[in-house]
Image (tube, rainbow, N blue to C red; front, side):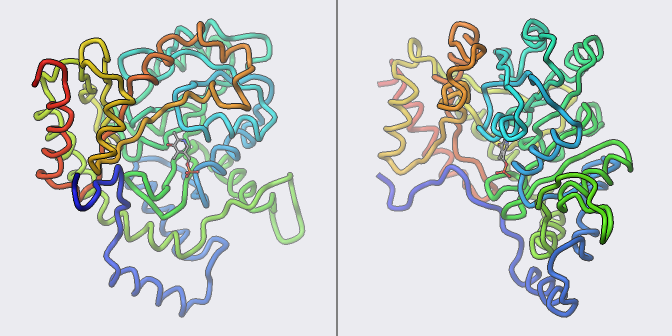
Length: 375
Ligand SMILES: *Cc1c(COP(=O)(O)O)cnc(C)c1O
């Protein structure tokens, strides 16, 4: 047992001294929310950094997801994945939309385009995919299905900050993409999120929606919500942007170190970088095959926890197992065999910029020495 635990994630904090000078500016300006100067600067610099045309920042990712669906007037049924964070499906529920779960593909655990097509009914209006762990969905195949059936496409890109495919931001695919800047993500604004869209009109619409639906001082165009990002968060975000390349580089180091150390461990599988993709290294998931490894995922999870190493069963349980959704016809276990299996085997190991090589060795040794046949 270690004296100090190894956390599964630690927030990346920008240098405090620099942040204080930003705060001083806010205090001088006395403009603390409602599209202040840091908010405007943050959106501009974020769009540039990400390689997108239009972005609207939000107080958190969940409100951004809810607003994205509203902005596109999505109703009826939306086809989505059960293998995600629960907010993905909650955003549908909050819009009165019926979620329809489609199974994932076993390679990168993203929604399977073939299963999407099978789930389409006369009520289907959109597809909501998730770039799980930052590995892009098969965006071309999904767009093909969407075009054929006249469906909108929304991506939950909470794990895909800065992810590019053939040099193009993954956020430029689909009608809208949604980011989260929660404390646990690769890039954070403590709490925060954003919607990426592709036209000035849509950005305008989204900006109104996040501010109660106000078009101007005396005109409310539609029932909006309050999902604005404040100046303190925006300033933190501007500062954070200066350091995010360093965070990603360190996460890449951690990822590569895990791969080197775990390579060849019987019963442990992990993901490799996708060709043509620049990654965010948001997570380091492994799959524990109990037959080969000699232990269930939950057993090694508990063992590591007792030893002071916190890991995360991300995503377990599946969203389709949660109370609000488990009675949906599409939540039936027989319909989601890949997601069911992955969810029983997945384990996300600690990853954050400060994780040391010694700590990585400690973690991987626990995994390796507990493997069947290693003793
Ligand atoms: C973190 C996360 C969200 C929610 O974002 P918040 O900013 O915490 O509201 C949504 N979807 C996925 C896949 C996430 O990982």
